[in-house]
Amino acid sequence: MLVDDDPGLRALVRATFEAVDVDMEEAEDAQSARGAIEAHPPDVVVLDVGMPGIDGLEYARELKADPATNGIPVILLTGSALATNGHAEAAGADVYMRKPFSPLELLAVVERLAGGLHATPFRASKARDAEEQLFLYARDLRHILEIERGQRVLLQKAYQETVAALASALETKDTGTRAHSQRVQRYAIELARAMEPRLAEQESAQYGFLLHDVGKIGIPDEILRKPRSLTEQEERLMRTHTILGEQMLGGVAFLKGPGLEVVRHHHERWDGSGYPDGLAKTEIPFGARVFAVADALDAITSDRPYRKARTWEFARVEIMDEARRQFDPDVVDAFCEREPELREISLEFAAA
Image (tube, rainbow, N blue to C red; front, side, top):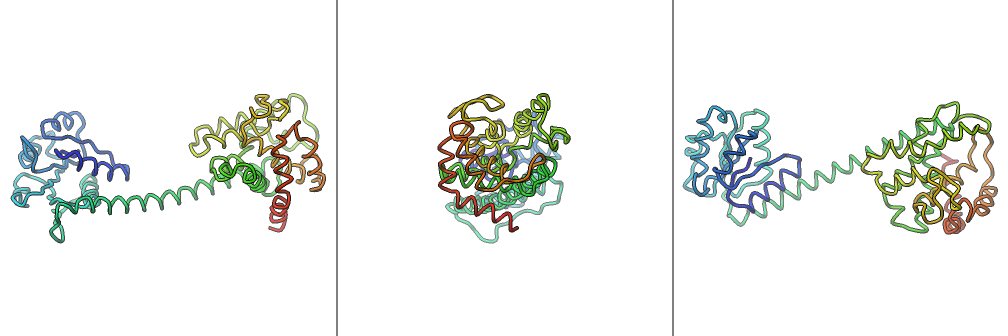
């Protein structure tokens, strides 16, 4: 709880604390703070000494005299040379800090007190002018943002490794083909780059390309690995993997948008005869139309339980023949344009 009559200072402290997920309540004076503290006792109270009405020293004595609040640590802030450490100790304050102060220094003291650790009164190493306060906040917020940015990079790397591990486990369950998910992701990104570079750079789409068949986790192995054509009932069950995949990943924030669209719609067909929703032409999300060609390319040129891999030349003819039936003709054109790059990706994986 920060009690200070300066709204600008309260906003700056709140921004600092929220940047590291520390909740902060605030009040402009002791009177308004009383009800809030009574309703929800905070872990630490930070008081400005020079408040109108009841000043910080008097309110600190009040808090320490009340059995309901005397266990709450109190930090006193002052910009006046008249208030001293002795005054703060007489009021029962746990810590005394002089303005201007570093928000990170205040945060460190708050966290120590909230954790029940002993905190000694803070004294700045040198006198600071009031104009320095904004500089201190800018410096500390920049430092916090740098830390947060580094954590975000580490978290993103963890996401990528987790998704890759899930995709690898899935392809082992499904076809046993090596690196299918990574290969088809690379194909799809290359095709998207030829048509809509922004889609190729979207992490949601990249994850969707990689996890397109995640719903097959819910399909029995005897159906996934059946070396013959599926019965009508088995085919109906197999087709549910698109909806299952969307349901499994629907709560994952970084897959919202194009990623989930790819998972649900990558078996739709340009002529409207696909599944699960029978969408046609441009009703099919763009990412799913791009992925359909990439997935077919890899399916044709890879071993499957029911047949051996076909040649690249066979795949080219098949894809071109299916323009305006199974595939968006514009995506087929992009396939023809980027065929050398796609072939290079295939050879890269074959050599790995």
